[in-house]
Image (cartoon, rainbow over all chains, first blue to last red; front, side, top):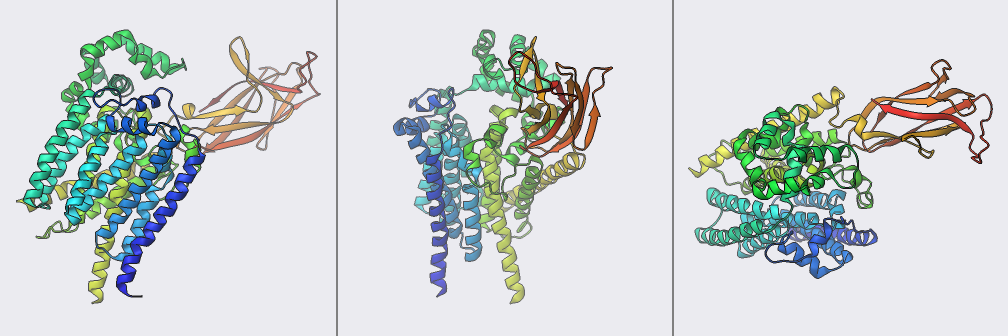
Length: 447
Length: 163
């Protein structure tokens, strides 16, 4: 068989494997019961273009799909499609074809691992959030590699989709668009006209996203209470600042009382419905987190990555690293039928927290190493390395924003899951990049 | 100029990512694994469960262990390995004939002076693992009550701690 035929067949092998996995994924999904949060899930069916509790794209999709079964099927198929798409993007990088096949399968193994699979069963934004993120990452690669109109269109569509899923995404999308446009200009990877067009479209999109972000009343009242009680209250100087800002001490008593025993609702929810807390929140508390971050720049910069330096009773599990290392793995998830009915993929995830940290540090080492080649060379033409760096920055931005405004210690795995996914994808591409360099070196030595 | 910016970013991100990796690796290996520390508290994440129903007297929970073999289940709700000591406090049965507790090759006699018996078992349990051990209760004679309850009472388990 000629080389060109093999070259064409290899991506098809990966594609067929992806389609087989999609078939098993969707059929398995339909046999399982949807996971519904009685307080949270109904809000996703209430479509409002502007305002409301949830972002318009997700409420539009859920309200049109109507039933839980349709939503699960939609989430499952779209998620599978996004991962197959990313696995096919590897072939566009024009690397060694067998190497591309191996890593394309590795991408599929991540996308079809049980931590990603289980999200399909939840009637909330998490599955579509990861799907949109994966499509966005794919489009970034395609823009850098192909530089054609369709890759720019896919980029704009995936960014819009991503921003319309969660309110924090709308804010993240603003930052990420600025970063991406700056990145394109800095690395000179776009034609002037295309860059200017993308900037113009980007400014319009950013304005829309920011507008929608300000109009959606997601759960800041709950998150502010949770972050104060679970994180900020533990450090004396932060606690003093919080009290100076008028946070009612009775709200803390309520939190402690509801935490000490099961009184029917979670402690954060109990605080958020307390009249004096609500009054404080309406008067000044809604800007508390931003003001707190401005007054405590050390918390803002180092808190997400090194919280234990402020409070020794906290651990790495309270930082972005903790959430990203273990993924969404709580006791109730471990015992969920969605988690149990699909293989885990030990390459990327661990049941044991400690080995999760060790694996995650290996991912970071590989990413760090992939940024070293070409460091002192006069050329800087390697496109893959540039995308790796951009995605790393993008992951950190997502992670920081989620940590500042939502990642309470008790739910950090879910909030940091997009970061966990980005780092694992970046790790795979870093591994491809380093392996390709090694192969090239061997070839040169042999010649 | 562009090359300089790119190189500076390359240096910043490769060094900071590498340092973060080393710190996380050292933390996991040296701080947690080698020194056998855990991030989660054992007393909040490992619990005991018994096959017998929980009963209450004046708001205090207790369990009637039956004569013969009783299974004590240990459940770890965290994703960390925990090592610790289980301490179970046993009191006399209604017939006052509870004599001995046997478990894991240990035999402990009921102390009539203190009117209680402590079962102590060192354990190690993996992430989300469920384990069990057999606790045998031996009486001098069969202990039955005449209120219609057909159980053969062994010992009254009044409390347990995990440290």
